[in-house]
Amino acid sequence: MSIRAHIEHGVLELVIDRPEKRNALTRAMYAAMADALEAAVTDPEVRAVLLCGSGAGFCAGNDIADFQSTPEAGGISHTTRFLHAISSHPKPIVAAVQGNAVGIGTTMLLHCDLVIAGTGARFSLPFAKLGVVPEAASSLLLARMIGTRRAAQMFFLGDPITAPVALDWGLVTEVVANDDLEATARGYAARLAAMAPSALAHTKALMKSSSTDVKERMAEEGALFAAQLKSPEAQEAFAAFMEKRQPDFQRR
Image 1: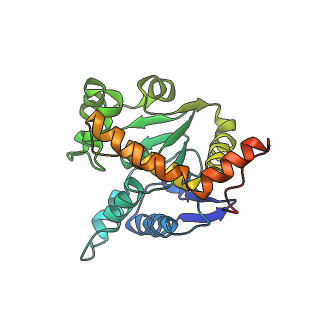
Image 2: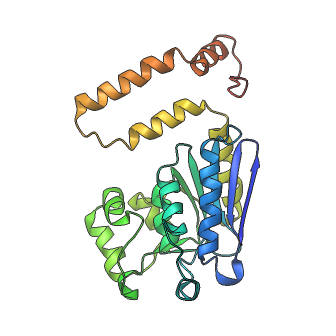
């Protein structure tokens, strides 16, 4: 199946593990990732998700041969299930990117909350070169994130951009030495897993809210702020602050 999934210390680690094919994704791999992400939504043991690839590259995009040879089953495709699962996931998602991130290997990152890149990472969107169009809502999200001109450059020309450029454009959160990538990304995931889960979930939902009116957004924030003040999480955070200790949200 080429997807490894395991939970440790509150973090669901999803590893794209097909290095001999540069981690190109098959329908079965999409199904496995969708299954893991869907299950994590209601699993109280999972407080954060870490997405990474094995070997020299993060993900080479879709396995075109697999998609041509494997018939699509009826109903919602596994690819669509994965995209829906990652785009709407309520828990924080951290991605660790090494080497090449091609096509969906880059567009899936638009739905991650923190993206840590190794110095050798390269991001490319060769959809037009392959005679197809963008997916994963990237035609909307990429322009919002890096600007219309830069998005057009990536979509139209398909040339890869380097990790430093991706950082400058706002496509990634941080660039670290390749040898430090795994530890840095795991460190972020661990920090998120130790935080108040509902506070993170509500914050993520607010950032994805469709409301663009300032007063409407203030009202959304105010309602959630008032509710959180009464939550066990906030009570634990306040108690920990007064007692000069680290909060323990797991017992709450």
